[in-house]
Image (cartoon, rainbow, N blue to C red):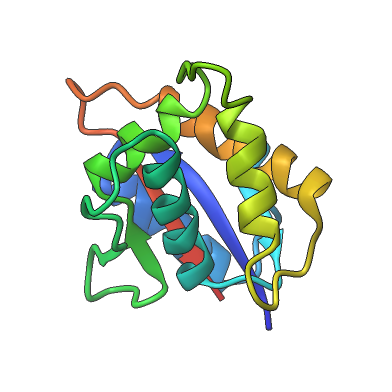
Length: 146
């Protein structure tokens, strides 16, 4: 299995350019999250787990193809972007840190190639990317999977 890179792009065109670069073997972008040995399915599972943690289960957390030019490039739906961003600030009453909970649950998924500590770093960085998306702009969160 290859890798998955999660990144922010300000335009659709720039997202396609990044996908093309990744297809050509580009190194990880400094502001992206690259995770070895997972697929888009595991990213969708992260959205599901985050949704449950912030009491927003059942929303649209399915990644969608954004352009026929690249079947490896998927867009993260707005509901999932909001949910992931909430992991950084969601307050619970005595339930502990939701980011830790989501990270542990994600790492416990079948065939995950990392443990809870490594997952926490990935989840925090993905949540930070999501939190940086301004809904008033055309920027978006993208997933590219090899």
